[in-house]
Amino acid sequence: MIYDAIIVGGGLAGLQAAIQLGRYSAHNVLVVDAGGGRSSLCRNYHNILGWPDGVPGEELRVKGRLQAESTGVEFQMDRIIKAKKQDGMIRLHGAGGQQYECRTLLLATGVMDRFPELPGLLPALGMTVYVCPDCDGYEIQDRQTVLLGSGDVGANMAFILRERTGDLTYINHERAPVSTENRKRLEVEDIQYIEDPVSHIDEQNGIIKGVALENGTMLPAERGFIAFGHNPVHSELAAQLGVTLHKNKHVEADTRSLMTNIDHVWVAGDVAVHAEQATVAMGEGAIAGIWMHKALKKMSPPSLPPAKNRSAAR
Ligand SMILES: Cc1cc2nc3c(=O)[nH]c(=O)nc-3n(C[C@H](O)[C@H](O)[C@H](O)COP(=O)(O)OP(=O)(O)OC[C@H]3O[C@@H](n4cnc5c(N)ncnc54)[C@H](O)[C@@H]3O)c2cc1C
Image (cartoon, rainbow, N blue to C red; front, side):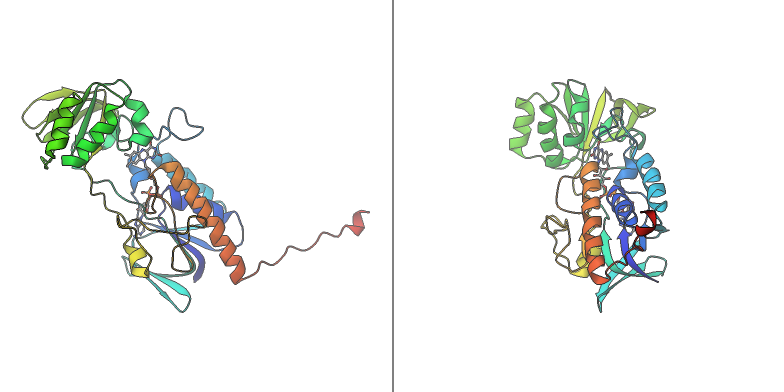
C-alpha cells in the first residue's frame, strides 16, 4: 500500500498534522510512532491556551489520536530505522522488518531530554519539576527552587532561573566542570552551589518536597528544574534522506511551508529549528499538514463532489 502521507512520530506535532491531513478527507494517512517522547514525559503543561490548570501530555496524546482516527488516519506502533527516497517514492523500514511507502513524509520525531534515572523524578516532571524556563519560569516565581544539572549547562540555566527566585540552589549532580567565570557569577548572584550526586527526589503525587543527596543531606524544595544538556535530537532519518541539518543537529526547513530541502519531506515539532514548546509543535504540525495537502493536490487533482441540482428546487 502506498500512503499519500506518512507521519513519523505521534507526539504533539505529528498528531496535529494527522488531524489537519485527516480532515481534508482526501488522503490515506499513516502515523508511525515508537511511543514515549517528551509529550509522554510531561505530566502537566501549564502554558497552553484553554488549560489554565494544565493538561497532561498523555491526555493530549490519547485524545489527539482518537481525533485523528475519527477522520480515517491509521496508526502503527513501530520505530522507523531507515528512510530512503527513490523514484519519487519514500520508503521507510521499521525496526521489526516492516516496510512502508509514501508520496509525502513528515518527520515529527522530536528530541529527548537527557537526565539521570533518579527515583521520584519522573512523577514530578512537568508537575513541579521543569525543563524549560520559557514554559515554566512562571511556576517558580519567589519559590524555593532546586536545580539539578551538569556543569556549565546547569550554571547557565541557574542564571536564567535566578531572574525568578532569590532562593535557588544549583546541584551539579555529574560534577562536570563549571568555568571560573560562572563559579564567580553563582557566588555574586547568591545561588547556592553544590557539587554532589543526588540519590532521589522526595515527592508526593508529583509535588516535590526535597532533593536527597547521596551523602545523606536533604535539601527542601518547593519547585525543581533539570538541565543536563546534550539532549539527543532525533534527526537520523532526516540525515539519511539528505535533509540539511542545523549545526545543533535540528532539521532545517522552509520557514513558510516547513518543507525541507528534499522535495516532499517536511518537518515539524522539536526536531525542527525553533523553541521547543508544545504549542509551537502543534502549530508546525498544522502548517506542515496544510502544505503536504497542497503538494498532494498537485500530484493528483481532487475529484469534485457532484454538483447539486438547483433547478429542481426552483
Ligand atoms: C518534562 C517536560 C515538560 C515540558 N513542559 C512543557 C510546557 O510546560 N510547555 C510547553 O510548551 N512545552 C513543554 N515541554 C516541551 C514539549 O513537551 C515538546 O515541545 C513537545 O512534546 C514536542 O512535540 P513533538 O511532537 O515534536 O515531540 P514528542 O512529543 O517528543 O513526540 C515525538 C514522537 O516521535 C516518536 N519517534 C521518534 N523517533 C521515531 C522513529 N524513528 N520512529 C517512530 N517514532 C519515532 C517518539 O516515540 C514520540 O512519540 C516539556 C517537555 C518535557 C520533557
